[in-house]
Amino acid sequence: MVATVYTVGNFKGGVGKTKIVTMLGYDNAVIRGKKTLVLDLDPQANASQILAKTANIDNIERTVTQGLQENDFSICITPIVENLDLIACDTGFRSFNKYVLKNFETEEEQINVLNKLIEPLKANYDAIFIDVPPTISEFSDNAMAASDYSIIAFQTVIESLDGVAKYVGYQNFMVERYGIDLQIIDIIPCMVEPDDSLDKEILNEARELYGNVVSENVVNYQKRLRRYSSEGIYIQKYNNGNYDQWDFNAHNIFTNILNELEGRKNYLTDEMEA
Ligand SMILES: Nc1ncnc2c1ncn2[C@@H]1O[C@H](COP(=O)(O)OP(=O)(O)OP(=O)(O)O)[C@@H](O)[C@H]1O
Ligand SMILES: [Mg+2]
Image 1 (cartoon, rainbow, N blue to C red):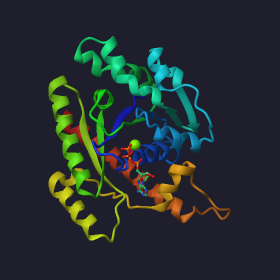
Image 2: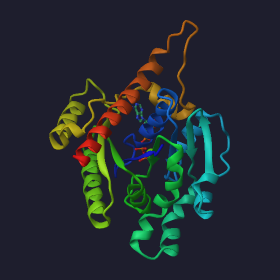
Image 3: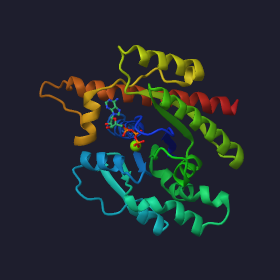
Image 4: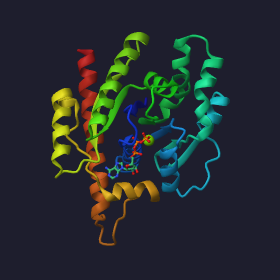
C-alpha cells in the first residue's frame, strides 16, 4: 500500500475545507473500509476537534507539534474509529513557520519538512487527507509539497471563487518553482442552496472557468453536516436495518465524491503514463 495524499485548500476561510477533509476521511475509512489518515495542519484544530468528538476522546495527548519536535510522526497518531487515524493539531503549531526558518536553510528543505515526515507513514494507508488553514504560509507550501493531489473547496460566493483562482495560481507557481508533482483533481462546491439563483449563477461561473474539474457532486447546505461539527460524525442505523435518512444523505454525497476521486485518479495516472 502507498497512500495517495490529498490536500483540501482554498485561500478563503470558512468555505468547507475542514468539512470535506473530515467527511472524506470518515467515509473512506468507515464506508469504503480503507485505511485512512487525517492530518490536521491548522492550528485552529477544527478537524482535530470534530474527529476527537467522533471518537469520544476528551484530550489528545500528542499532536503534530510533538511529532515535529521528535522528527517522527508515528508517535503522534490517534486512532479514531476502525480504519481511521488522526494526527491532530494544536495552537502550538502556529510557530511552525519560525521553526522551519530557524532549522532549515534552503527553500527546498523548508517546503519539504512535512513531506519527509509523512513519507514513512504512506505504507500504512490507502489515503491521507490534509487540512490546512486558509493562508499562504509554510503550512500550505509544505502541504502542497507533500501531496499528490489538491482538492479545492469553494462556497458559492464570489470571494470564494476568487480564492480558488488564487489557489490555482499559487499552486502553479509552486509546481514551477520547486518541480513539485501536484495536480488539481477536484473542485468541490460546498454549502450550496439548490434553490438560490445566485448560488446557481456562481456555480455556472465556476464550471465556465474550470470546466469538468468542478465536481458533479455538489455538497448542498445540510443541517446534519453542520451538526457533525459539534457532535462528531456518525451514521445512525435503525433496528429495521435502514439508515437515518439525514445521515444517509450526508454520507452519500461524500461517498460519491470518493468514487469520483478514484475515477479521476486513474484517469490522470493513465494520462501521465500515456
Ligand atoms: N455542506 C454544509 N452544510 C452545512 N454546514 C456546513 C457545510 N459545510 C460546512 N458547514 C459548516 O460551515 C462552517 C465552516 O466550514 P469549515 O469549517 O469546513 O470551513 P473551512 O474552510 O475549513 O474554514 P477555515 O478556513 O476557518 O478553516 C462550519 O461551521 C461547518 O460546520
Ligand atoms: Mg478549516
